[in-house]
Image (cartoon, rainbow, N blue to C red; front, top):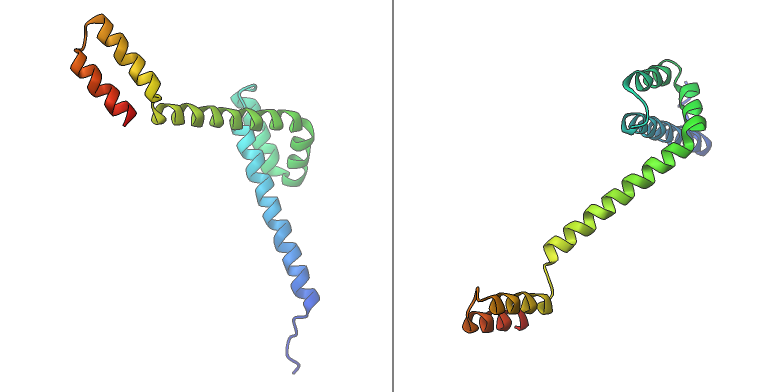
Length: 129
């Protein structure tokens, strides 16, 4: 009885099939995420798209990508911009103000009489040092 041989072409074909499967799963996840992320259509429309993609997966994904490709790109770009804006706001809130801003705020407090000259000097030394 001959031993089963697994040639290089078999390995290559298996890799191609596996890669195609990974791409297919990625497409499904992308389409489902975009369907749920949409705000321009109601729940009934979303349910119809989900059913269509589940019942006829290849045709459903293909039609969704053709019909909604601009909307998908716009929603993805908007999400990236929102995340960047949130990151920038967080970084600015954590970074604090510059020493010059701290000294100016302390000077305003000194001028208004809220702090004494000694407290102003302490704040100025802390900001500069």
